[in-house]
Image (cartoon, rainbow, N blue to C red; front, side):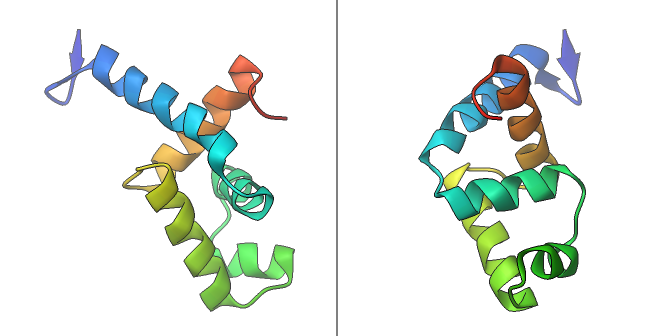
Length: 89
């Protein structure tokens, strides 16, 4: 089966790989990843964590890089999958 020309197995494997990479993030990066998964924007993350918007944007960029993700949706998928699999709280 495929989705958008990509085999679903490949898409799921990518999300699983990113979910495993969550354990390599710093506690702050994991916190940011969970806030991204909750649908928060950079300004909302900044407000929640009492940091500047620029710092929030930098944390999100770091999470994207560490998870080898190309979008906030991929971060969210990794966090949710890790929660379902019991890898993170």
